[in-house]
Structure formats: structure tokens, C-alpha cells
Length: 117
Length: 114
Image 1 (spheres, rainbow over the protein chains, first blue to last red):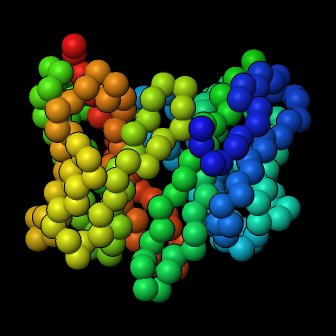
Image 2 (cartoon, rainbow over the protein chains, first blue to last red):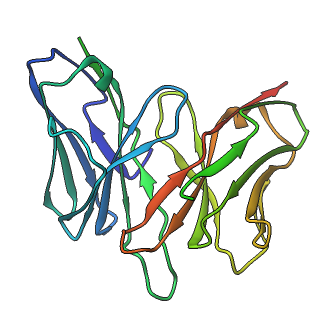
């Protein structure tokens, strides 16, 4: 079992629907991430939150809207998605980079498998 | 310069053999190199990681070898088992105003035959 919990595990939605993906961690991490992963490909970074503020948006279309309500929760709001948005959406968390230890490991959830009809 | 090149794309190893996956990078600002293991239907799980101040790190059957001058690093899986069959991703991370931005390799699908 991973320490990053994502819900739902599977989601099927039409192109006009609005849905949200949820991610939760209780490791005290202050950085949280959304990734998109297509079959047989590596994860692609979408968004990074640092101390509950959006620090990186990798030019993601506005039909994806992230939200970080508190340090343990991360949401991804979906609206008017396209069939090519079907993928595994992964959430990850990490400690912030430490000036002494350097970059910290990211821990992933098991993802939400999203299918757009 | 932000790429991490990974090879081979796929690998078949007999049970008990050694699996070797290689990665190379260009950006000398990378300072953290993790390896992730991913099973079908699961998220990537951190396997082992290394920083450039050491040339080798071993955890159980898994070893990372790091060559800073060649800008290459590799994962060795000793005594490979069928349960090791998974996709392996190398990654690199740099600090440049962006928190822990991981750059992934393209992945290696490992099959360990019994």
C-alpha cells in the first residue's frame, strides 16, 4: 500500500462532464505533484504545489484545474476533456528540497485511470 | 539538455541472472538520481536513489553505479526473480528554482523468465 492515496481508482466521463480527482498524503510533505502517464510512457509532470501554492504549471490546458486546499490534499478538477486526455493520472508528494540534503524523493500514489468517452 | 536517455527499451533475463539498465544525461545541474519500479496498474515506487557525491549505492539485490565524468548511471539487479518483472524508470532531478522537478527516462520493460 502506498502512503499517497488517490480516489477514484477508475473514472469514465463524457467530454461535457465535470469531475475531480483527489489525492491525500499524511507524511507531512509540503510539495505535491500531478503527473499524466500514457501507456508504455514515463510520467509527464503537469503541476507542482509548494507550501500550498502553485509553483509549476507545465503549460497544461485550462480544462485541467489544480487545487491544493491544505498541505495534505490535492485536487485536479476536470472539465470538457478530450479523448486524448485518457490516461493514468498520478499524484506524488515529497519534502521540499533541503539545503543540506538536496532534492528529496517523490512518493507516488497508484493513480486514477481516466477514460474519456 | 533536460533529457535522460535510458536503454534498453526491453530486457529479458533468466531467473538468477543480472539485469542491467543504463541511463545517460547531459545536464550537469542534475544532483539526484532515483530509480522507480512500476507494476501494471500501480504507480511508480521508489526503488533506490543516488547523489553524485558517491559512485555506488547498494540496497539488497539492487545497486546503482554512478559515473559522474561520463554522466551515466545504471541499475543492476542481482539474482533477478520473476517478481522483479516490471517497468523501470531512471530519473534525474535538478535544483534551479523549481522544486524537485523530476526528468524521467523512457523506461525499460524487464521480464524475468523462471
